[in-house]
Length: 108
Image (cartoon, rainbow, N blue to C red; front, side, top):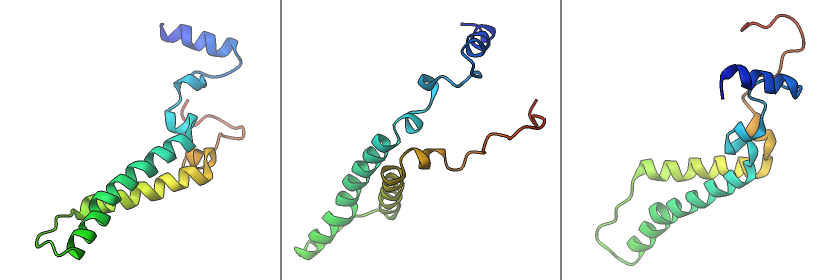
């Protein structure tokens, strides 16, 4: 579709271009589901990079491999996933500017 047709369709529906929910990022449409996915990936990374090396050392294995970057990634993904699970749609909207309350449009 041409850009003009999108504008006409959005204006006919009372919205602006880009308001179509199907065009939103999955994290905005399903924040809790994305949060659950992040927590699961984090749990897998944490088991591989934290739990397994600790138990290998406990068993007396002489060499243990772990990556500080992957441990940091596991913790970060876990925290972000928990935030999305707990806060849901509110967390997905954080950090975005609030719609203007009248006045001239600074971008147009």
